[in-house]
Length: 46
Image 1 (cartoon, helix red, strand yellow):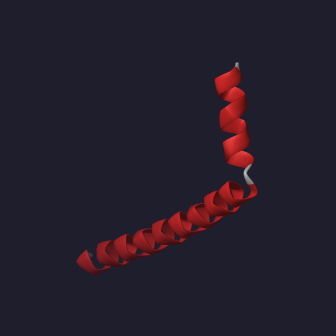
Image 2: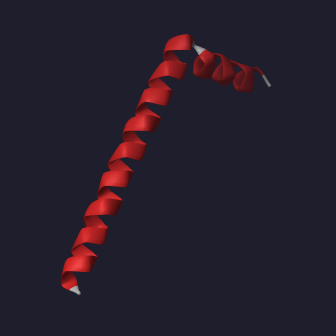
């Protein structure tokens, strides 16, 4: 039973790492295009 818990934790950690990597790539891409910066400016002007 301890083995299955350990395996589940490893799988969750692996998925979390993959999600973080995908999010980091997406944020970097948006920041590079300037979309996030533009949206921040619009919010400040309101």
